[in-house]
Amino acid sequence: RGKFLWLLLDRPDRGPEEGADAGEALLAHLGMSGQLLVRDAVTPPLEHPHLRARFHLAATAHDGPLVLDFVDQRTFGHLTVVDLVPTVDGAPGGHGSAVPAVPEPVAHIARDLLDPALDRPALVARLRGRRTDVKRALLDQTLVSGVGNIYADEALWRARLHYARPTDALRPAAVGALLDAAAAVMTEALRVGGTSFDALYVNVNGASGYFDRSLAVYGQEGRPCTRCG
Image 1 (tube, rainbow, N blue to C red):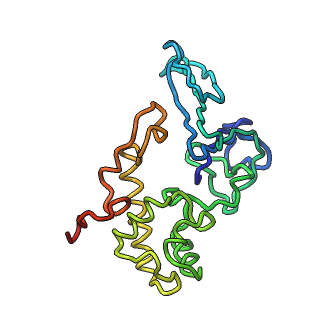
Image 2 (tube, rainbow, N blue to C red):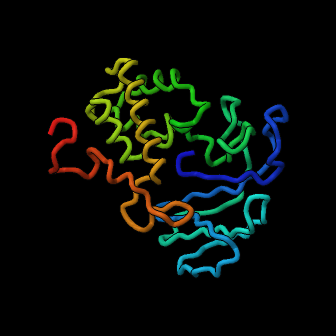
């Protein structure tokens, strides 16, 4: 959620009917340059000068033993063990578990735009209720998480909205179209591994993403518009 990732530590099989009062999670935040890199445990590791933590993962029915490295060049990222708190809406806290709980430091962050438990009509109403410009609202993690600067620009272009349009002047249909555009942009970006501008932005296998080749407006100043020329 947002830039936070977590692994449930206590009773990961706990169901929604059992409540979310107890439990802890290993919380990770990648900061500006953090990476979580996975490799098999058999291949000798390529020791990274910025390795901060290493986890040895047991073999499963599908995979042999694995190693998960937390690498962070600028040391703004962190790992910590934190308590879980119930979700406000009673829905699961993340994709990986039915537990209706999130780590306490994450509780103030709204659901991700791609979260199946997101209440889209309520989000439209909250966004229109803010007295700010539409891009600032789209980046407000207390409204909706997951939309960064790059994808906000791309979504606004697709929805044909100027970033400075006041949110309280937008019709519900326009807000809905903007959220649809943002969700589409992020879904397309995920399929190709995201947007990698340098070697710090890679997936867990160390591969770069290629969505920068599909950017229509972000970083495209001085080039012809792909829609109107």
